[in-house]
Structure formats: structure tokens, C-alpha cells
Image (cartoon, rainbow, N blue to C red; front, side, top):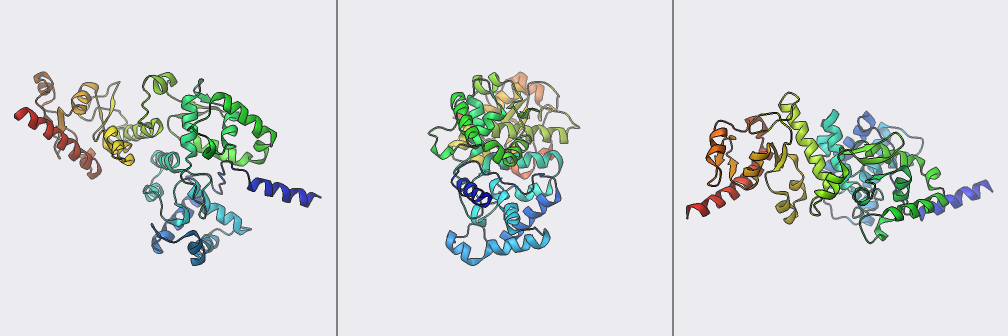
Length: 381
């Protein structure tokens, strides 16, 4: 009887469309987490699998997945092959690797080299934007973005926070069947009752725990001791007054955190205006290539790339944003026709330091400079 009950429960689980965040290694700093990812990336490169055209059936016949399992199994021996598969599939679920091993996130190699706060921030970028919990090496569900669904649910929640029951409710929902990108407070309550009825929490305790632990790595989100999540910033200011439907608030927050980290690294732990070098409150994350323009051109990476921004004091940001100020390749300011004499006199000796003008940022500054020059030509006619 016990054997039959176990088999029935297993069959039932196969038909549940919950958030399947199965994880073999949950510590992003641990050698096993990084070594398995390193082996997967090398395997993809060695076999030229990036953007391959194999169907799921042909991919299976080619034996790539089995070969990769053998390689990892020889490094980390497991009691069964299911654990090895889980260690591979977790990187698809977390967003590092594509289904059918068609590639890996462009930041994956940088993640392997990084340490400390930088590693955490890179993980956050990949996890937030590309995690797909129901995907695996052999299953592509990447169109479902559970993290985006959770963040929007938090954004629209009247209390601007989600408790453990809300998280359980979300993880038990098939988001492909929801006609909007979030659940209301009332829907969360109803979904938790359903989850409670089928003992979801007791059966999926580890997956819930993994998810909450990964959430703790996201900048801008705080997870309390009783597993309540909320934004660190003032919720009304962030989510109501300045909400921009064209901007993903969490990705922008990650961009800001990365820019702050850069400033502290370059300027002895301080947040300073990159132009005046003054440490002050109210510094602006000033896009170089406007985020609205980038999103209009479907360039999501540029819209949230911290290298596509300068940390500026508000007056400088105003001129820079309106393309009445730009910088040449050496960081020397170029003042436009509509910049005031006082502003020019106050800042004629200021410049951007060359060490922040690495190639990625110079690429965006070239776009900004081009728009600036077009604007100035209008005044010359």
C-alpha cells in the first residue's frame, strides 16, 4: 500500500504546473556551483553548440546531454544520475544556460571570474531577467518569466510587501494562464488556500527555501527573518509617484547599484559626481544613451547597462540629459549653445576621469555626442 501511495503522489506532481526551482547547489560562491557552470560553458564552446539548429529529438539522438552528464558525474560522483541532471538543469532554471544547451548568458563567464559584491550583482542581473523555473535542458519554457511576475505582483500589492503565504501562492500558480502580469491581493489569498489544500508547502519546502534565499541576493529587495519581502526604498516614492511603465524598475535598480559600486571602487568608497568629483546627496543615474530610446529600439541590454550611465549632480544632469553638454573621448566637456555662461565658467576645468572611460562607456558616449552635434548644428543654421 505504501508503495502505491508513493507512486500516485509522484504521478500527481508531474501534472502540477508550479514553479519548479529544483536546485542541487544553492551557494553561488561555492566551488561546486561555479565548477559545474564552468564545465557546462566549456562543453557548449567545445562542441560549438551556440545557436545550433538541432531539434529536441535530434539533440537527444546526438547524445550531448548524456555526454555532459558523464563529464560532470566523473568530477562530482552522485548516488544517482538524477542529482547530476539536477546540477545541470539548475543553471537553465536560474538563467545562466539556454535550453538544449544552445548557449549561455553573456555575463556567465564574467560571473565565474567575479567575487564578492560584483558576483552577487551579476547573479542578480541574470536571475532577475532570465530565470525560467520550469525550463530545463530538454524543456524550453523561457517565455515564462516568474521573477518579472513576482516583482509586478509586489509592485501592485497595496501593502507593497509579500509574506511567506503570498510567495507560496505565487509558486503554485501557472502564470501562463494569468491574463495579466501579476496577482492581486485577493487572488494571492485564494491561491494560498488552494496551495494549502494540496499541502504544497510541506511537499515543496526546499524549493520555497531556495527561492527565498535567492531573493535575498537581489539589490533593492529585503527578505525579513519571517520571510516577508519588500522593497528597501520608500514604496510610495518608487512604485507610485515615479512609476514608468516603459521602465523595468528592478533592472534599473540593479543598474543603479552597479553604478554605485563602480563609484565606490574608483573614488575611495565615495559616491561622487563623475564630472565635478564632489560627494553630495541627490546624485542622478544619468543615462548616456537614453533608456527610452534604447527600449524603443528593443535594446534592453543598453537600457539597463550601468556603463551606459554617469553619476552626475542634478544641474549637470539637466544639461547632459538635454544634450547641451557632452564629452569627447578624453572626457573633456563640450558645452552647447544653450548651456549658460555661469555653468561653463564653474565647470570649465572639470572633466571625466580617463579610468571611467573604458571602451563600453565610450561606445555610449559616441551615441550621445552624435545627438549633441546634431542639436548644435540647428543653432548654426
